[in-house]
Length: 173
Image (tube, rainbow, N blue to C red; front, side, top):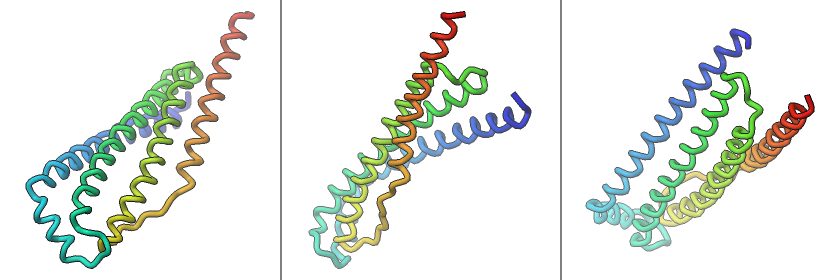
């Protein structure tokens, strides 16, 4: 492996570790926000009472709490995704990325990506509810994420087939 490829792998690995730390930090923040919503329920309700909107402010606190729980699920899914990606990067560094484990990791990443995109749609529903109550939350669906999910499923199949072909070839030699 060339020096530039080794450097790129080290940078990628460090970036993935940093992203996992940031993601877990976000999870802690979301959990703290969920816990804080309990003693400050009246303050939150009062905030939404002062805002113009067509939805009863009493709906907002449950929506916020459900959104926070869904966001915690998102953090967990992103953690699994990043962990699998880090393992793939490590296997490249080890010199043998075309193994059955990476095919499974890519499939797991595709499933995580699908869950992330599905949760993103749910977040769009939450944003719509919050906006109806007077908030100003921007949300737009993205086809890019869904395309990445399809790409990951295809790559996982390519890796699985390549692994099978390599095993067959090794058996012939």
